[in-house]
Image (tube, rainbow, N blue to C red; front, top):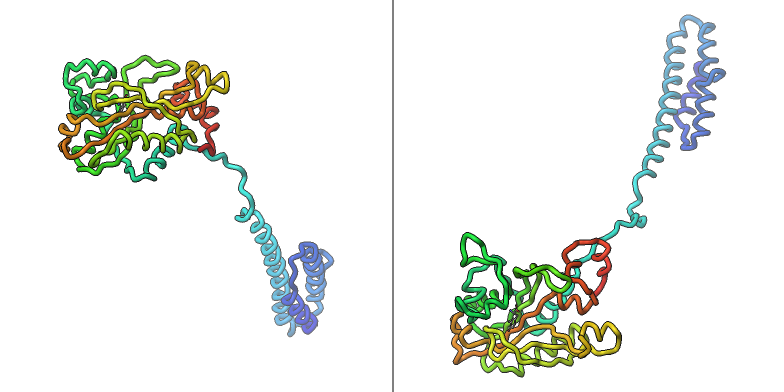
Length: 338
Ligand code: DAH
């Protein structure tokens, strides 16, 4: 009898399966109500007394072997099932909506790209400015009537400190620190004490351009602007209208030919086909002097444009306030543009 139990012992040890049905019939065969273990335990009574000890030991080993085997195999099956619950790293992720850049950033970056391609660097300055950098150095001394062209937010406790009204303040800071040749553009936020409407906002953005070297002429300015408008609008037909800015002489406003094909074209160009996009001119010698650059040796041009205005033209947006409301339905339309 002991020999028989030992045979079962090696059978139990050798048993392998990951099929739960097979494991269950294995369990029933040994540990079920009518299973072999119960038969062996029943036979224990008739075992001669001198063999009872050995018989008992071998039988217990068999019983434990069966229990351990069943437990192990069932655990293995469960582990395998558990593994299937770990996400498969190769599967397509469930769609997470991704954001996109703000239209003003898209346009700003595009303009920066265009100018850096022809050697311009990017420079920045503070939004809280002093009178010198925003006005006086730019040929706008105190009480100059042209200061009224830009309604200013002053810091009440100190009339010398203000929120910059234009990014032209950055060209002053740049010239104070760098000698020619200078080629730089300065994007940034500017502030004007103006009522908010569909066409104007008290906070908006500009990009300033500055080029100072030997023998820079108006021709260089015009060619640079033609390159710029061709790159951004795909249309280099521009015209320069005489204008006035205190910091440039002569000064001009730049119009781009928009065309008169649709009703909208008539509306936004007021029936002329032309659209104003920026101010520009030859840097006034007084400004160069104020910034420590010798006007007898160097000359240069400057220009300034509103980023909102350019973005409104490019995307046909009729209300400037949309840029600042952060309505997700508006913002997500610019995904993948430009
Ligand atoms: N600063 C002017 C403005 O805010 C824009 C401008 C005009 C900038 C002519 C220039 C320039 O550099 O030459 O309206």
